[in-house]
Image (cartoon, rainbow, N blue to C red; front, side, top):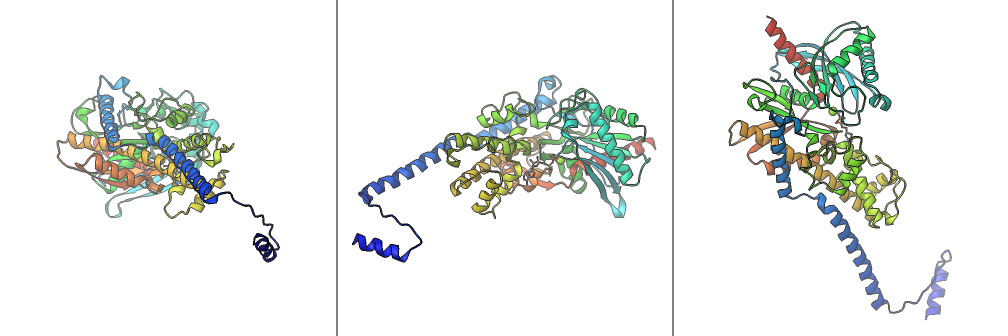
Length: 495
Ligand code: ADP
Ligand code: MG
């Protein structure tokens, strides 16, 4: 029988070399083999879940994060506690939102995001109320970002000059708003003393200096034009103002892009660093530094520590490093490396590519998690990264991306819950309706980040009805609007 069977099959398939192997007790041994494979897979699955477990936060953990954020906010606001506070709660001297009567042409600079931009913003009132913008993007080369302050500001002024020429406005002097998205100590709207660089900037001789002074000095060195610097603005504040132009309920600004930060309207009586008890002032929280006192250590994982250690500012901006675009990809890469080292992924083979810092960009998290993407496409993204994966590998990578992005959105939501509840309590309300102006590519482009964030805020502050409004170019438009408001108030004062 066997001989005939072999012969027939070979005859039918002359192009194939077929070997017949006699199994010994297939039904017994085979069952054991199947079980063994299933066992290995289950064990590996369990091992991976155990590693991921600390990244999955419970409702109780998130509530704790919210409470701790609230405590750190109080520390930052208090006169006595401000010096050692990590969440700095910086006064911005922005006290009023646009009322629609602002008008004029303004220049704006946007430094501190991925791109450096110069903008011309035309604000109109009355029937044609609205904002019209022209802008040009300039690159800031790495050696200038990390060179001397003089080089950095000379470069900025060079870009302004180029922009004015490009717009055919050489020699015209306009009021300027400077969006400078780094922690600054302000004693006035038109002054910003840089406390410390973040997000990859490291130019020397700037920390402790007034950036408006540095800008003005560079303008004088060039001797080509003069500018009236009216306001130093944080991008969160710009975002809040931009959305406030459309929605009067907007009293909070949030950024989730390269970094993460928030601002909101605080009662003057609570802003102890500034004299006076009347009215409100926008406070730039600098919430990225939340956790730098160690208060998030119980939820930080070995992967967070690894990312932090190799960053430009180890130990600093711990909350931001769990949330924002500059770091999420790196967290994922560190987890994938750990899985691979333990033989739980990529067949245990760790490639040079996987060991390369920064290869896993946060935009890949968005792509991999995109709902309309088939697993095959996940594989092709990984292949593109030089990572040979099986179908199972793709499923695992996708799960890691989900866990990391979900945690980021939840942590961000816990912080936001603390903010809106504080506003509600400040006003002695049982219920608060408030709008949060949001900017940042991670928030806008990630398929699930915004939903998870909204859900978390809803769960953690049930007494607030929070609407999220995406800002369009908050850091550019916002700086111009703040400048416009300041000019309006200044002119009213002169009259
Ligand atoms: P910035 O915060 O620098 O002003 P963005 O808001 O544009 O600028 O954020 C840029 C960051 O967004 C990048 O650092 C990158 O990590 C992240 N990013 C870029 N594309 C995507 C995407 N498709 N999905 C999620 N994050 C992205
Ligand atoms: Mg930005």
